[in-house]
Image 1 (cartoon, rainbow, N blue to C red):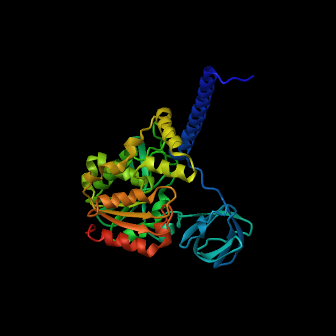
Image 2: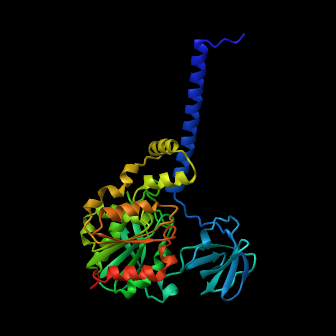
Image 3: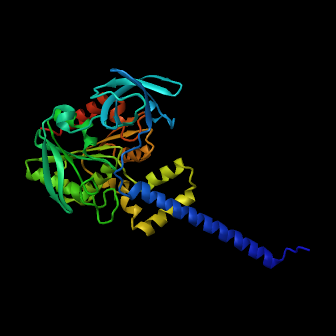
Length: 378
């Protein structure tokens, strides 16, 4: 006959606890690996070609989005890429039975029906001349890991230095270079460590400004050595974190007359928490995974909490962030703007996802940039 003895109870409880601990640690270990893959590992692979072209004319294109996540049903202006081709698409004309039709414009060629493609926030490709007719120079400057390249669109003595985001490149700045040129400023659109064709950081990771700020500092020094009287760093996504780290760490921050940030990465822990919540990962698993990430991959999330030091800032800032951002929580920018209301001009864009504020309303975006630059550009 089965008897529930004290020893049996203790053994059962101990076994259950050990099983739970093993499961929790295993899940946390696995999720810390996902954090490494998604946040830190260098990734230069293009996004998936996830759209199927259904029909196309000179002024309208229709496609099916098999994943059905609705991401590309929003209004605005976007780039459309396929193997060997690029075009711009505009507002939605219709959305019926899983087929989305949009305005088709500025195409170099027409994709064939059945072609797979992807939409992208990068509305322009090429370089400033091919995209906008803006003459530019390919320049280079010395940096800690070697020589870095940049586009220089010459304007006035105020130089706007563009810092692209995670896994990005220079074309991210092509949405903004025309308005900066109209405002009378120069644009320096830079590469930095871990970019394609550039030396990697010694860590082998993206570090969200912890080391990359030194490359921005080198670009600022280049600008000052070549006629700039002041600089305006312009950071997109992770580039915003790089700008913040530069402002906190570089003696050359004294040359900054203003800052523009678009969906900036201000607190990587909050980004990790938000991504975990979207995947329905329990908070305690995320907390343990974050700790394991620090131990396994030698990163310190505390060093990436740029909101902690905003009281140190004394430079005017223009801040853009979409309230539907699914990568960097808009609440971090909300807190930044609330903490320094006299310093931060905040454009919180309804319905915009990550770094999509320009795409949803180019006129509003460019008007805000022009107004911000007006008192800063002689």
